[in-house]
Length: 143
Image (cartoon, rainbow, N blue to C red; front, side, top):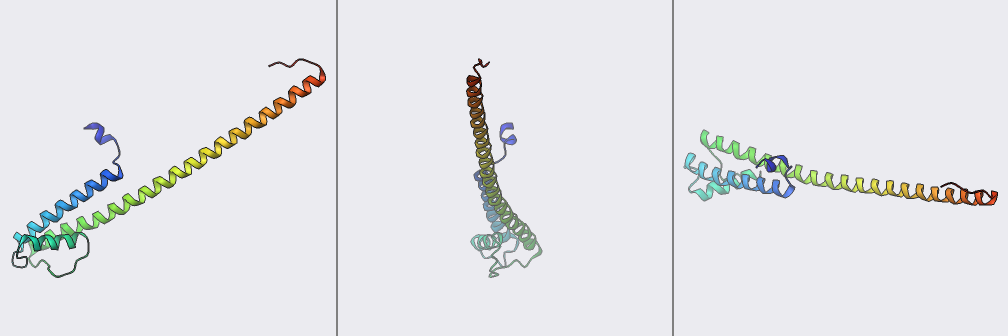
């Protein structure tokens, strides 16, 4: 369990958690609104329809809570919907940022490798010139 808490969640894992939490809020909100504001919500399915359109921030307005207890439930469902959209947006954005960072680091590594290759080629060229110079002067070259 501690390993699970130490590793950052993957986008897929985070999305699964978000969708599960939102589904639970829709079902619980639909059931609660039916029992707390039963004059407006004739059955649980109407309550779940309302919860689904509320959590997705669509809000058609075909059914709305009239009692204070129903409005409290509505507040929690709305906040979950807003959080759902914010977290999904953040997850998508972080994926783009991670991909761009990876591409940038890869390009930098290629540039750095290219610079090392150029430096090695230049040193080989200088080494060759030094060998030729030493040979033309007739002396042995160390190393």
